[in-house]
Length: 115
Image (cartoon, rainbow, N blue to C red; front, top):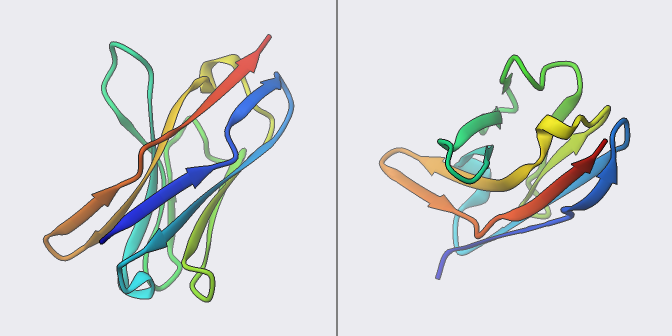
């Protein structure tokens, strides 16, 4: 059974930091590209950052320079370090695993940034 379990969300003041984690099980994690998405109620889910199986990273313009995605294949975990948080970063954050025609989503973790 495939599971992606996010953790690390919460309430933080603007300018603060959070680190999200996504622990994967049931997949050959090292071959999967991993990504973080976020969604605000009533809006489309948007890509925040992604990391390939080889470690190449990609960021949304809105998060570039503030967020860092990384992965630890030994722990089957992908991370999202979020610094200099802004109120507009408030959303539900989801991790996604992608390999060929397979994709899996976690259940999400809520991030709230107060002004």
